[in-house]
Image (cartoon, rainbow over all chains, first blue to last red; front, side):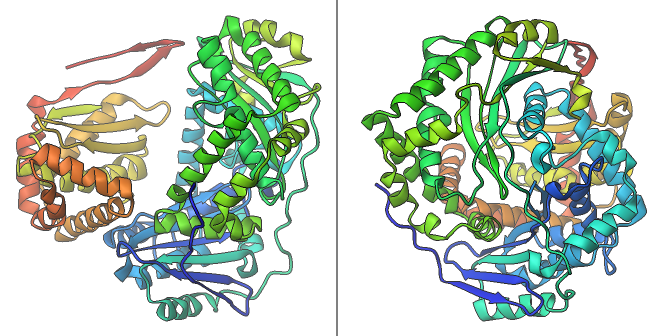
Length: 441
Length: 179
């Protein structure tokens, strides 16, 4: 059994403008990871403007008052780093990892792009064209189409119902002014945190961060709101037409838990037994015993304001109904009798054994610290992970399944494939809605 | 996708090709990304793949086109960039950028247990001595613009390349072309 994880001492400071700084000196390779995140993600995209938050973070790196986009790239890369910029549903962030000696220069660029971007018109238009083109590629990937249709169906009108990269028509309608406004409104110090992890001199790193960020503006009037919990969904079927598909991508999904849930550990253990690993119940019944698919998995996707539980797989068109039936039967069986003692202990050992690997690099620890801040979970969940995983009982797993698995007519079923055949296969499960793929891109 | 037969891992040019691929296609300010993705907007992605092998390896370049763009035009730009590499000017700062990125990459590999194991195993299997794993930085640091030009000429020779173009033409069908 893996034991307790010792984190390096964390040095925290809250600036008068509300920004939180966390610095950790960690032994190991002479690298440092820097991560600056703002609690403003795609859930704040206005209606018919899906993809705005992502575009803001992508264009921010393309120019500031002091540097052009090209200069930013050259500066960062000549220090041996690559700048990652991304938005998810809850946050937008800038991150990089590089040799420790360059910390001051790297921090200077990261703070510059996050706090003082100028959104040059030409760069905005170019990045928008690039994003539109990359969304078009989604149409070539039935699995990606299914994931998008699943969010839309499971979250219905919720702010998490659209993917962060948004939709082509929405991006096309955006104006530069809207990026500027989004940044002004939501990128505020009290909604942000800076995490520095690696081989660093702590007092020097803190002083540097203080100097770079205390001049960032005073707190905004309005903090980014947290999305509400998603509403339950009735069983229905959504089919996305891919006339050229030879297989069907299947998703079964329903609203579930936010990341901050006190049931986090029972949920991940129950899922590990049910559909998490390669020896899960779903793999056993769908892949091993019936040969319906090469792969099948389930997951709790947890965000700030809520989450979903979903099953994901693919199969031949003729066996779509059978696959869904087996997955639903397995859900009911699990909710009825839970994991065996052996299954439970195997899943616990698997999760506890994997955990240290998620904290191996400076970047991984920086991300975990930023996540703890964003989602509001305690760092004891990180240090005492193994103990908490092992404390989960079969009864707790049953309770999780009864609340969040697709039982009793709960959960939407998504099929992506040849619409007529797929609809025929899945219509026994509930009312069918057929969508062209253009509705999800 | 364009490919060339490269040297085996033990060949001194293997490390030079690592630097070359970084100049060409690693990072936003690499030559192919800047030209194909940023300036010409003909591609959504461009990357290189050069993996050390016991026997001669493959140097590969991949370009993923933006919707509606013609492969022939992307190819023409690609060949132009390779020609520029072999015959034009490679600045010292460009080489330094690549060396810094490679140094950072080596340090990142050594940041995980599996990365250390991989580095030692690769060196033992491909170069015959695990101690060689510690020499990567030294090899990269020794590379200069002249080496890059020579290696581009010798290994990325236009008469030796194989090109595969995947053109989706109809639902479920694709046409391959090989020269």
